[in-house]
Length: 328
View: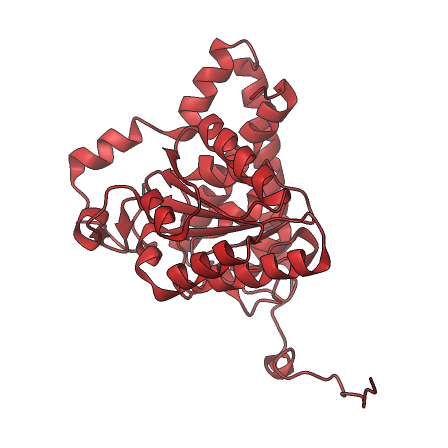
């Protein structure tokens, strides 16, 4: 698969945007400026980037509690994201959703989700909708290795395979379900093997290699657009922080952490781009500066935005739509 220079530059920019956003979120949370919980995507940037680079604006994604990277890779607005993390009225969900529940219907982002495994069946609904309407839209369902032990995972793969729905199930296998390593919660080595039970392709790739992820995702997305059914794509990666900010992650062996840090996806991609004479060090620095300026603007927007009003607590809870009598 041939990838253009511009496409690779765009992927590098998306990865930097995710890394810088998450690094800022980490420090802002530590400073007490972000309420609630924060689950960072640091170390997993290649997965969301490689997959979402294959998608159009009208394609769908479902996300997880660790969803900032997915939202950014799909084109989410940093200002509205940051305002939501700050709990401000200008946020994506008017400050009510916080870090784990960001959604953007215009970008096909059907929502991050604090419930483990909830995105599987939402993705089936989106895939069924696209199939029913006869479009060539695709839905990508992001989830972690721990959620593949949930009933929703198996129900979703079963229905999607029977109905040949245009879904790409992307397992971000970061080795841990909260604090439990994969070897302790599964008897299999590759989550991709679970595709066999449902008669769909199961593919495992290096989740820290954005080019490998992108190539596998391109094939899966193309297959879905042709109404050939779903694919289970497992991206083996690693979260470099704890499950949430405040988790000391004492369950992770020091040697394991150090080994994976040496496989950093951004450093790996940057080295490839430089060795291939696709981007210079100066061009990379310019992209990083661009992202830092975007983030400064996003933080300023969030800090200057108003808090939700007291009466907004009952808004967007119940529908104001009056059902009309319909005749058939």
